[in-house]
Image 1 (tube, helix red, strand yellow):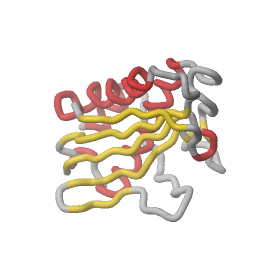
Image 2: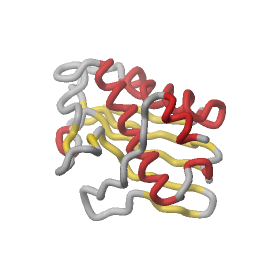
Image 3: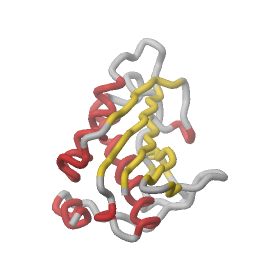
Image 4: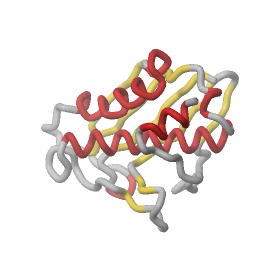
Length: 154
């Protein structure tokens, strides 16, 4: 059902991408799945290519960063599908942690993360409502403008 809903928005989950380092993309602990940080990588490009590079508010607009947030979530859902086999096993999105690559004077972190939050609520409805943190950082892997991890109940 979740994948059908995604398809109504023109989204088809790609095959699982390989981690960019020495970590597990998803760890299951009890009834929770912990998804490692996801950056806005285009899954159709090999080698991996970041879609939006640079600092939000300087190199990347807030609207572009919101689109990057959706891509991060789509990549996280791809990892969850690979691990769980079926996204309908997700009971609820619990928490997002968002890291925005920005200058020290940038203060619109919440707006950027709304791109991810709004997307999850659109797809999962009430079960997509979650807690979150949005922080600014000096740099991110591959010069990505954003990185998001998540915790979901399964």
